[in-house]
Amino acid sequence: MESSTDPTPIRKDPIFPEGNIQKDDKETLQAPNGIEFLFDGPSLEAGIKPLFLYFALSKEASLKEPPFNRPITTLKENYKTVRLASVSLPFHNPKYPIEDAMSSWSQAFKDDPDFLNHFIENLKEAVLFLIAKGIVSKERLGFGGLSRGGYIAGRLASLIKAKALLVYAPLTELTFLSELKEIQNKTHLKNYSKDLGEIEVRAYIGNRDQRVGTRNCFDWIESIVEEQYKDSIRSPKVELILSPSIGHKGHGTPPFVFDAGAHWMGMILTETGSSLLS
Image 1 (tube, rainbow, N blue to C red):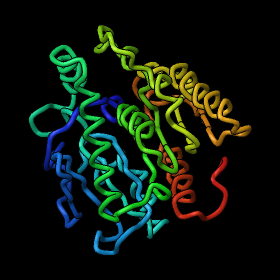
Image 2 (image 1 turned 135 degrees about the vertical axis):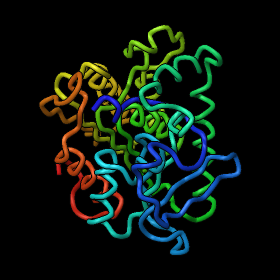
Image 3 (image 1 turned 90 degrees about the horizontal axis):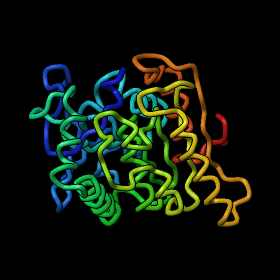
Image 4 (image 1 turned 135 degrees about the horizontal axis):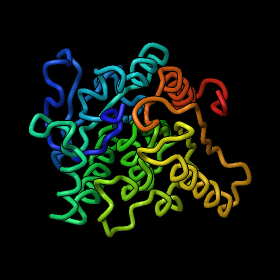
């Protein structure tokens, strides 16, 4: 399951692995800065809808390929009004073998220490483009991610005040990975917790995840709670849910966890029922 959570940067168009993903009529939309979104669910012609933007691998794999797309399929089946979208992460495209993703990221940091910051800034501008076009409002916008996708989602949520953030086995400290130990930047997600505002957060991780570090995730969640408490939020809607670790290095995510998170996000975006501990 390690490959389900490896982080990587972007390019465009059909991505990994091309032969295994069924082509269909899902809609695409390119922002002026070149970031391309892939959509599922309600047509863009239907106007403003709740939107869940999910990062796992490439945009195609994130929306179409099991098991990475499990949150997407659960939302699509149960929350018909929610529009679903993804963007390809860096180095998740046909030019780069998935198993080399982290090595490519490491080299990219050596070439440009700010390469990931540039990607996230471009992503922010692309999401603001969607808002300006009337595709979604911030009040009905949710971000989500799996492993390295969780890192991207967490960073993006610190730049755009969305309604909710959902992460599975999130990478929260880049330098915890052996491939990225030499990075000098401040990379822990807790460095951005003060900018998350009142966002609702739910994180799932294995109780002994040795790939991204269960403790790292706990530290991040705790920092969000403390920042919200400083802002006079006495009962922050921020949750960390542990389950028995599975898969390589305890980094896998079981189907029932994907489903639980998807239902949590669906209820928030559609305002149906209580989101806490559902």
